[in-house]
Image 1 (tube, one colour):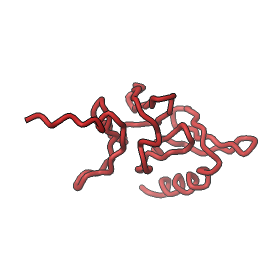
Image 2 (cartoon, helix red, strand yellow):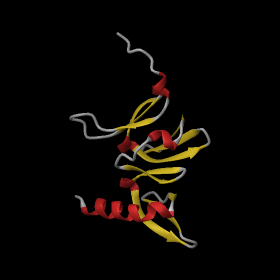
Image 3 (tube, helix red, strand yellow):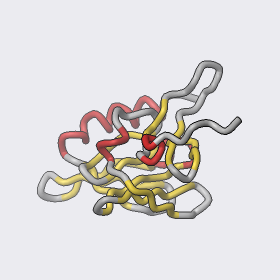
Image 4 (spheres, one colour):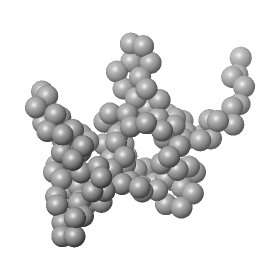
Length: 130
């Protein structure tokens, strides 16, 4: 039997791993994208641009605030950006108390000053885990 259609399914949400499942997923109208397959998320008006590890950029209706809490490895780093910490090479301090994240592929993602200290700690923690 087909599951009833849920309007909430149209709103992107990050779901915590289910029991015996090790990865969080981004559930959206296009299906489920494992968070491990997301490099970054950028807010663009009423849409989210999601860059996947296969290089594709998917456009979804929604906002970063709808994603709710951070779910490792996806963390919000700016009012319009979230990033997968597994793809971050380093956090760089720019002039004027601005920060940016440099990803392994050379992408630069702005990071808020407010989140910079927390990001430093998270990046150090991820470097020390095998």
